[in-house]
Image 1 (cartoon, rainbow, N blue to C red):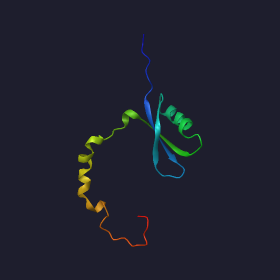
Image 2: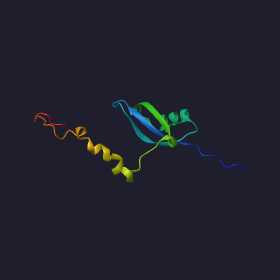
Image 3: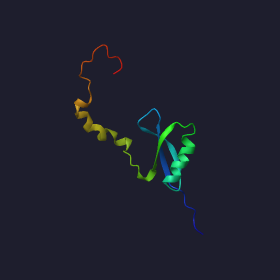
Image 4: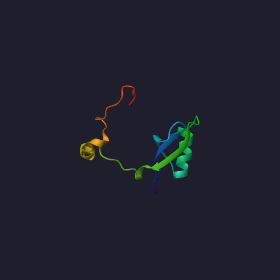
Length: 96
């Protein structure tokens, strides 16, 4: 007797009408990319709020380890020009 196989897990990203970036909205199981996009449309864009859907098979996403965050981000601390804390801003500038 063969064991049933489970469909792969897909991570779903939606771009809203107001934004330029895609935001992760959730995950779902689907047999292929087309099915993942169609299911994501039905599940995550019921009110027509999205203009674009990305479906990425979870096995292709690689993440850094939060426990190793210190050593990962340590080199960025050496680049003071990336942190504009030494600039004098005019008082008229309220939301910077």
